Image (cartoon, rainbow, N blue to C red; front, side):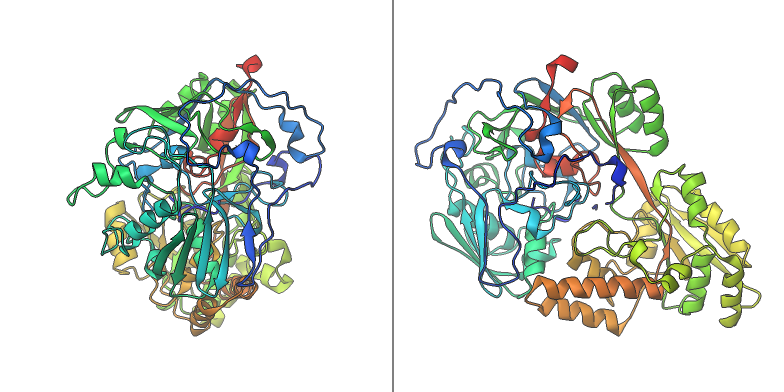
Length: 629
């Protein structure tokens, strides 16, 4: 869904054997990506499916019978079966929502996508063998319109969005089912950026979204068109930020904001005020317990794979707030939860033993594991030292013994290897670079000697107490000792670590964080910022004119192909410079009950439990097979 923000952080590789087999490569995309500033991006619409296009509000819906769709159409999704309507689907969420508004990059509002729609969406027909559903990044080729029926750059830095006809707000006060129009999108953008509609300053909840500052003007020349101008001409920066998970392009209702917010309480914080154009209507919320949604009878969208079917399929969707992993796993075992993600490999293996009929999917974390040296300080400002430490790490052994095969053992590039056109798979690295990451303690000692450390050296590592897999650090401590590098370990509480390392940069040796800066499965421009001199996410304190120039060039580029080349070049360069010590990319596991159908790997782990699923509105496209429930 070309939607998204950053976020919730996260967002991803998958083992090919874990991806459901596809019958054919027939992929129905609505339009191809273009780099021309005059090309139009469109998505198909069918008036008989999408409902009325007049301004008459429909407050009732025609009863929907079970579809008679049969498989065997020659499409890859035929193996998923024929959709069915009805039933209750239950999913767990780890965070209690405290907001019923576009989320400003906050996981607090992780349920917004169930009752709101975004401007952009993901191509539900894309073959998972081509577009990896596990990534939070969707290549432009596989982005479709949601509330936007089409969009184009009419000139560099000027984006024209055409609002979809026939979309109606839910029949709830104060909007009462009227038709969506361009004024609604204009209100959202003005509220977010402080450019009008009564807003003279950016809403404080959105100021963390850097892309918002690039918006210069927003206008609505007619009821179905919105024109946005940006301070940058870079189409990739504009579109990847507007389409990214958590980018705040979900559209809230202006009447609700005007009726239920004040100058001191500027956000929609009462669940009774949750209203949108989305597939589900919120009917009940129990704080720190559950949220109940029912099918929106006047939802505009159809199933792209089965275009005769109006969405959503399930009658009721329940979200249970279960922050404790063991408690959630127990509920999953008992069949009280239908979908659950971010399950550690060992737990997933045990659950499969007790519940062998569950469907299991391995999904890598959005960021690979790595160690950050202070690249601006000795001895880590010496490339030979960094290569030596990398060659001291036995990645295949960590993958096989520590993770039991539940990870990718390859060294990590900057971007995920599964990002079409942007990745840099280890198998394609030059042999000399592959050797630079191979386990070779003998050569590591020689490199240290060449760097004037023939007897090794002493250092320390600062570890975030919230970081996963902390006992890996003891393994590294032993492997470094084998090349005469003595490393002490300092464990810091997360708030102290953030102040000491992330904000203050007071560490003098190595650090281990909750999320690394390699193997990133999200948006390329953001990845280029990881090594930018003075960048807020540059914990390694890299200062490299070559990287800074690439970033500046990328921000001034006017074609996506130019930016792709820069990302590929930086992938190679970062690997050659060993700016970080690569560990591995571990898998979390996704489990679903056998009666959940339509699911074939839609995920993305940057926002925690079911965040990406909710963000992409996948639940509206899943169905329940009553014969297995």
